[in-house]
Length: 407
Image (cartoon, rainbow, N blue to C red; front, side, top):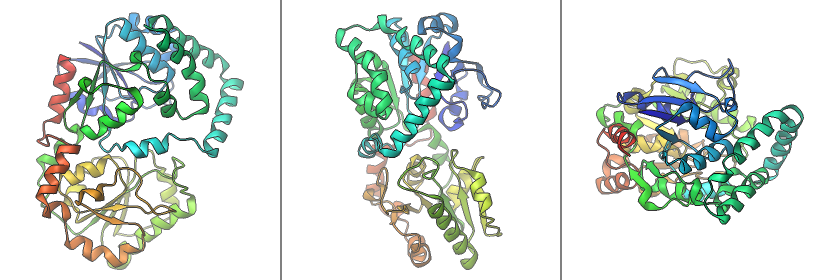
């Protein structure tokens, strides 16, 4: 079976577990054109295709001949056109989840544009028109090449309006306002009920299209004994500065880094800073924070470090979901320039601590480390699993692959 993945090749955490599928051939499509600077996909990918090699979605499907198409997102115009055409061709289309901590209210907040968004958008449009006008024309030709695959006047009108709406709104807001049936994959493999609420918000996907599997990337968190703890702390960093979110600036970013370093060196506590894949590692290097008690890492497998840490410091993210599943001792951070919890507020589950001020690192750590809320409250823990990662049995990967093979 030929399965076409629409996924960034560098996000191995999104799709790497599919390498365990020994019955399907996987192909990848993400970038407009071949570029030596683009990262290579994982070795199990048979071949990588490029959008600009195909004038229309119909030509693409005829050339690649996929049996199934799996979308990890559907916000790009080419992605939408391919989905619409695949529907008309009666191909199996699947949305495959890649996160585990969706929050509907936060998603709505992030979909609203601000002045900075419009400044960036204007520069982007001008750059595209001045230097990449041919690429723009190819994109529009590809997009409207799917127009005849629409089934109603209402869908056709929304399809025409969508590219214009996306120019002056954030994509997810435009998609939410202009939902139509042909833009919804036939099936949705989602990891939990909470995530489906956000997915449905932007697509209008019906509940009967959803299949719940649990979170594949957390299978290992079930197989390793989480009760083995050391005395170190892991700080799970998030790219708020790089993503221009919550007014993070260079000064605030450095302040947090230096506070973590001071704590590590003054208390002689090992602090491991795990950077997000999109974070700028070089920025951290410029701080010259050198100590045997302080380490900064980004690429690699750090599950053992997470599961043996005495305390986890982290902002709301998918990884926090897995660490609560592993019953780790967690402090949910709101260390933003204007303190708040951004994203899913896991503290409402009663299974983790909360900190709004980085100065609490020196005053509250002893209290945090002495009380593991996830280990103490089994009833709350079971309710959490039901909502965020059920069943948590180490076999979510098997369920996802089975669905890909059988849907």
